[in-house]
Length: 138
Image (cartoon, rainbow, N blue to C red; front, top):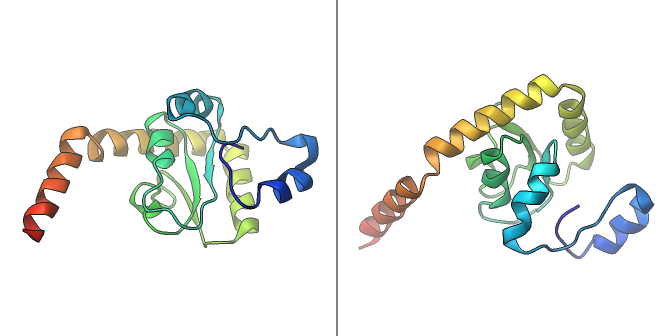
């Protein structure tokens, strides 16, 4: 589990030695961790557009995330990953298990995510969107 938060001690106690808790890692190390994953699961309940979601998709990894804030911008339910109602940990676990049991589905979602990021999240596209937003506010 990469990251940290107020529930870390509770998770560590519950998971025992079955889960490795990496804690916060420097941003430059994120690709190394993502490369080790079969599925990126994002547990945050409030975060604009979690950067880890497009990072995982760019690596061809499907994502499972709570349907909060900007997650749906990149986690297209059933296409690039699975969105789960915020706080629905049973639904989250079911989604992860489904992807782990169906590697072909996980691969299709990861590939669709890689295509989405390559098309929608290029540097040029992001600068263009921000410029249009600033123009609208000017």
